Length: 226
Image (cartoon, rainbow, N blue to C red):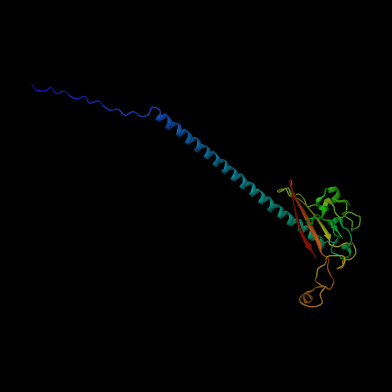
């Protein structure tokens, strides 16, 4: 008797993915996307701030350049006063000359060497008092400057320019090395300077100070003339 052969049933094997795998991956993608958005947002803010800072720096440099240019004009006008009738004579240099914003002796200054009178308001600038009340302590009590001498306001930059000139002396008397700051030219009796000298008389040194105001900004320029 032959044995009965029965066919084996092949049961297919089904591989099932974890029930929540897809959802977990989608959550990670959302987190990564949010992180990327935050990084891009911070980068955009930093870029905008860098542009803003660059514009501020460029604007500051432009204003400084304008102030320097305006100060040069003020210095030129002030130095030109020495060619006018008021200051071209040695005899006149011992007198206060408001028409030229000129003081025959040194004006009190702040710690930076800027005459206090030019830092003060219009009333004290044209008067005989200043911030510390000693503008004319070593000079005559008459005014030494006028607001009318200010340069016309620049229509483009709106710059206001004011200057003042003071002789670096302690008295209104004729200049000497004992009472004034004088040039060394003319005080030597030998050597190269003696050969090149143009006169034997010691010349006083004059200080020229210019104030430039543009809006709320103020700048000062200073030089000496002898």
